[in-house]
Length: 131
Image 1 (spheres, rainbow, N blue to C red):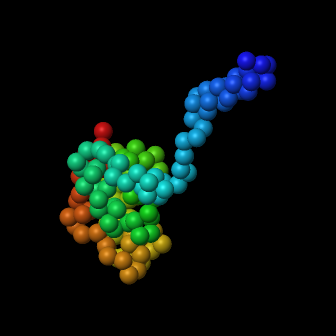
Image 2 (image 1 turned 30 degrees about the vertical axis):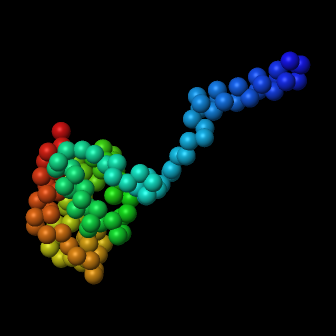
Image 3 (image 1 turned 120 degrees about the vertical axis):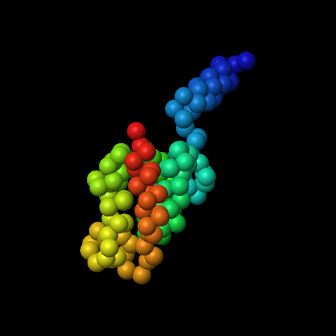
């Protein structure tokens, strides 16, 4: 084998090794909605979380589509949920308002169907179950 072929072979192997270690070649989605589009059904968690996530997906995804891919930890990190504290959990607090769409932070906005008392209780049950 001549020197040129050796260098080409070495460079090829070095490239493959670097790509493997650096994770190049894998598609990384920067959008959580892409995560849902390309990996649907990947959300896991407690029964309480899954029940709440289904409600959030059906009631909130039209305006807040990224919530459909959030894990329990994502809700906490985003400040939408405070474990065992529904009063400080904005996702609960904003949806419990009696006057739908009256204030800038009331959910849902005018023309959308609000959460039922049972759905709000499901959110409360989930928040209260978080350790």
